[in-house]
Image (cartoon, rainbow, N blue to C red; front, side):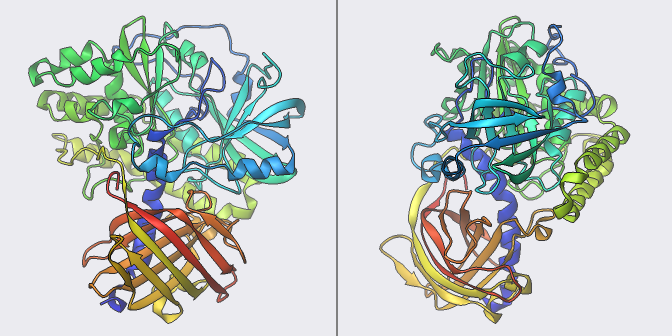
Length: 611
């Protein structure tokens, strides 16, 4: 049976490669980067394009302030690629890029108790921005797991960490996202253009070309932090409470994961509880009760925009990647978007099979509203209005073309991968209106899928083994033709077993647009074995290029490597766990066709919970 289904290795790898990005971002439910300054928070998502600052919240959300011109506008010029050169001690750079989060802490016992402390520390550096040199700046890593990278980490630059009060062009620092999960490089800015065109508050965004100690790291998304300066542009009162939500929701067991980003010294979080309590109202009273604490018109438009651009890793689809702000002027909560680099793709990597494209309703607010018949109709009307007023295909296609041309001089070594990914976005934009309209006409579809699990993962047991295969064997879809090794499992710990039949294959990471064309991308190592109890188990490892070398090794920290264990069924692979607390080691590793790839691995397997 194993030989008959070895194509499962490739299918499972593609599935896991896609879902891992969304799951990785979800890990941030248990931890968040601290604010850089009182006026901003790092890691904010972004808005951009050539559409200007956009409007304030729509619906019943009121209008924005009209502040003095922002001196930082030039730093977010959508037609300018900022040149950033960072010089720092080589040993500091090596330490910075290897700093990582503890995956067991993020996903394991106590993961829902609240945000965990960031492991990232500041390092002194000289930073040059478009020719202006700022000595004694500070640089640190940023992000959670999905964008983690040894070779191209996301970065937070601070101009005032060591020089009190210093700004450059109206900015206290710069947030640089590595676009590691987006081969096109443009999804973040494009997504936030749509949010802005919808009249919703969102950060500004453009692009930066970054070098560190002379090494070219390529194009980054330069995004504006979500903080008081952004709030001042979109709300009449910016003194309220701002919370970051990463795998956070207004249901039992989830509220503690919201991290307060302003007014941190005030421990009062009752405003979050008030929203959760409003969701308990009857259907007849829900609109009025929830509307007293939430800007409902704005939320529906925000919710519909997430679905329209297929932001499957946002609030409504996965309770991830969002901010909520409590405006003292209105006394109500509004949502702000976050981290939409996994957008413009109809495939929902974490969603249930057969899910509709026109709506997501896993978040508690979205679910409660959508399951109320009259309010479901209100959502569909919000989507229709969005299609009529904000979704302009011709303008979006021009914006895609503009970004593509702007970045073309910087992506020559990977031009084909970028082209493939960008063309996929064009196809999405062109066909999205017809897809959505067909679903919501004459009535919106039902949502019958359960909410996400609110349980932390637990240790299931251990896996160890060895592998010997050749580069390129993954594409052959038959690991037994070239691969061998050992595969020992103790799940549970008192039931050790060894694989009776084993195969291994390795090649370029599957499942991501353009990844097979990116020779600096992750390597994918897959192993499959049949065990005495009749189980067929598969391991799929994704390994950073910096680790995939002779003598290379790394932990399962999602930047050196990450891996999943799955059991095979006659229909689809079933994920049983993710690997932690161990390492993968390569005796030999090369990307030359047919070159030997040998090594070993050991790991603890975490299962249940979010999986």
